Amino acid sequence: MKIPAIKKLLSFDLDQLIQAEKDLYDEKQTQIQIEGEDEGEQLTHVLAAIWIKEQIANGMTENEALRAYTQRVRNSIS
Image 1: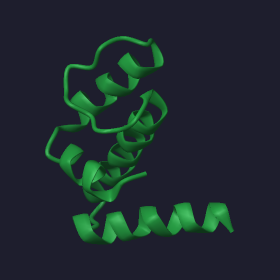
Image 2 (image 1 turned 45 degrees about the vertical axis):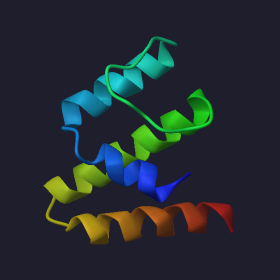
Image 3 (image 1 turned 180 degrees about the vertical axis):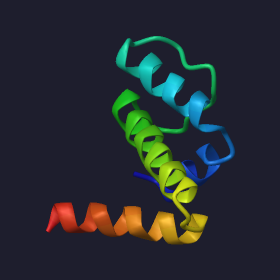
Image 4 (image 1 turned 120 degrees about the horizontal axis):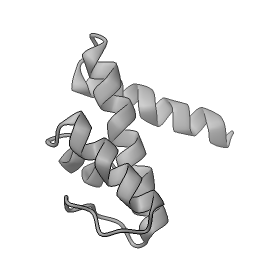
């Protein structure tokens, strides 16, 4: 997971991100550029961006949502 790659994806709208997620699951070429060493890392970045976009739609700022996501990841690891 690379935060700069996730931040770049936040410039896309939610529909584009969801389509990219579907394309990755279907092993198709995505319509948007997604950074990552492999499809797994790209999927991680897209899922993170989708989650963050949803939090922003519910009233969080981008920075708050990004912090909340990274905290979620840290909690799942420990």
